[in-house]
Length: 130
Image 1 (tube, rainbow, N blue to C red):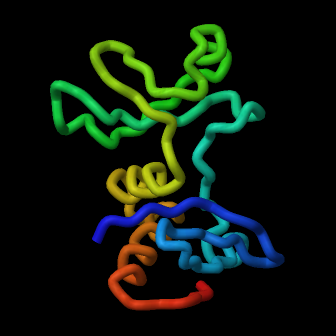
Image 2: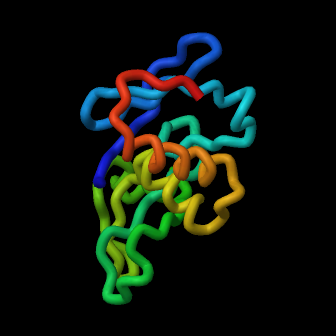
């Protein structure tokens, strides 16, 4: 089942992960996933995460690469897709970042949470607290 999610509001002590169907899951990241990392794409971040969405080598698709924000800003690329070295990049979403972490290190907090979300999405839920 295809789904998307993003990190929504914070209500002490829960972060809300909002899915594309407007359902959400509240997660106490500090308690259960203390090493969970947010995708980097804010002007306060030194590096921004971008996902490869088109490549001649299909094994590279969905790989995440970090670009220095100052490089992106100078090139005028910080808010759009761009090509570099015959690869097409798009600013990474939280789901893409978590999926990449799951594929590279299933024991990372991002990987664990991504796996839990995949299991939960196969169920019909209204609100879930992890």
